[in-house]
Length: 334
Image (cartoon, rainbow, N blue to C red):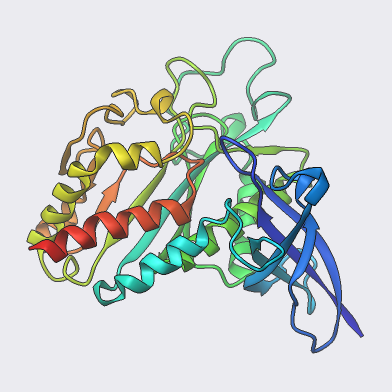
């Protein structure tokens, strides 16, 4: 007997990578081996030296094919088995290991927009839907488009064993969110990428695409982010450590903005519950700040912080690495 292993990887498309996949048939009991692909077709190699290597790093049951079939998330390597330049996971692993004593944990809120025929799902062919207001966590009628895809995706994530924490409709019509966590790095990146792939694959069956564009519609409409919640063992015991983490992020704000996703200036405008990309602020219960401290955290005197700056199209390996480096290295200096 045999089973299907769906190999999934992140390509080299710029400025925002996309996901690729292909199927390998394996004999029962056979572990997914390293495999290869044509990097010249994924912006990862020239045509005259096109071979790239897929190294399995994370597997889950396949909730679409079911049975004994699996999904296989892979790192990309060069033919000499060194990391490919587009492989951001390796640096994330190294950073997570270096600061393991801090026990950093993440939860990521992934916003996205369903698109069809070049416009958000449910929008009229010409003009605009009713203004923002009734869509966020809404219910009923024609305004809540795409819910059947969201429900299918949620069940798929659960059946795959991913740490999905919840879902909700967002402020823009056709925009939704799911949350993954609480997990260390690199697992937070592995599971977010796998959840993204499942979302795209399931939406495909409905004739819908998924956009992670940080500003899917120009004008007075909300953008799409990936708010990243972060804590260390010290933060989970001390409010002072949370304030220290916020201060650390402020001192390294420019590097974070440069690595929080392409097109960030279009989203972080100071409007639509964002702080401007060229300023830094933090505050309790402030959704207009760069970093929010939830009111319940202040009340408890311990917990976590929420970095509201990352775009929906951010690379979770890059974001988690940067947050660990910035906050934990700052703490080490004290």
